[in-house]
Length: 174
Image (cartoon, helix red, strand yellow):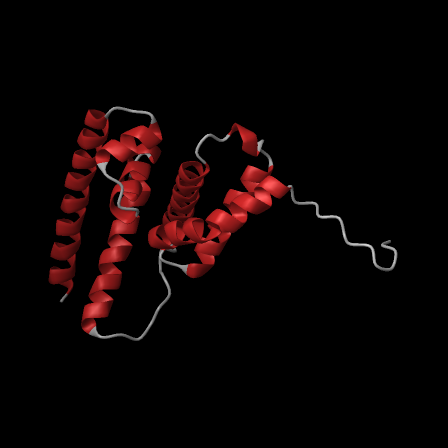
């Protein structure tokens, strides 16, 4: 019980509080770009900072890079879980045909992303959702630029094939 005038003791370590204040918006945006859903992005935000609570924040050399990668991975986990549950339906909204087509395209991209190996999906998310260049991704992930370029190229080819299949199926349904 607190005495009158006594301030409550915070159970959140100060470095974590500072990390949250500095980076929570970036973590949310990153998650939202991948999941396409604000509620899922909030879940990712919570997951990332709960995980970091269990770590020594002094060990993290580049907090922004670490948090962005954590957000990408946690968001991909959610997309994969939806894929496994066959519940990839994003929020429904009454919209014009072009908005519906755009939503279908995003759903297809997320569905394909969920089928990629984790490192490949992370590279694709960093490249196309977060706008990093191949050299930046190589540095973030501790791999070569050539490996990033080859992996991104192959994943783009797979995505293109899936989109063509999606468009053919959509055309046949109409």
